[in-house]
Image 1: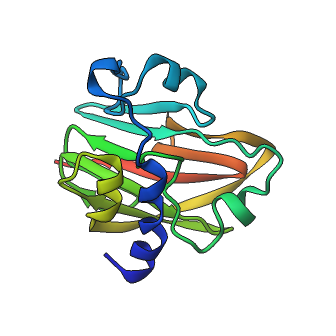
Image 2: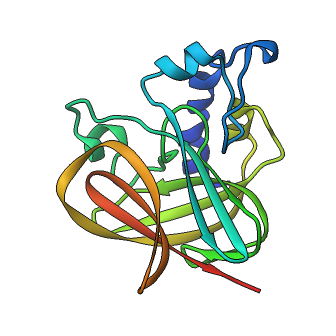
Length: 193
């Protein structure tokens, strides 16, 4: 892991400690591994969400938290240009692949990856990491880089208040779309054999 990534994510671990309730009081999230009490899940400012992209035989699932701008400048303070961003809020954003695929131009094997990005006005860097850790705070501290790809950026006509990841399968191919503020980053996805 590079020093800049380590520096930017090491402080994130402190934010995650204490965010989880005891296992006996937890309810499972239907598509993702993060769990918490019903009260905690329903009242948190950045709710959990997921996006699923299916291109047979590939099933790609992204699990993330959805921060809101709330009047703040997205790319000045929340996800600053040129800095590693966890690509969501709170817990690490994870990407799970059922089969081998090219994601953002990076060949990834079946498995789970942490997804981070470096937002830029015209092209985002997409970072994929692996970790053996299962605790969210420990995941940020025990990263091994699996690859770096790119996402082309498009301007949006209307600003998006709450960070959103969604899938897109169309005539130009399949992609994960990351939308926030006035930008959309398009991460191309292609199944591999």
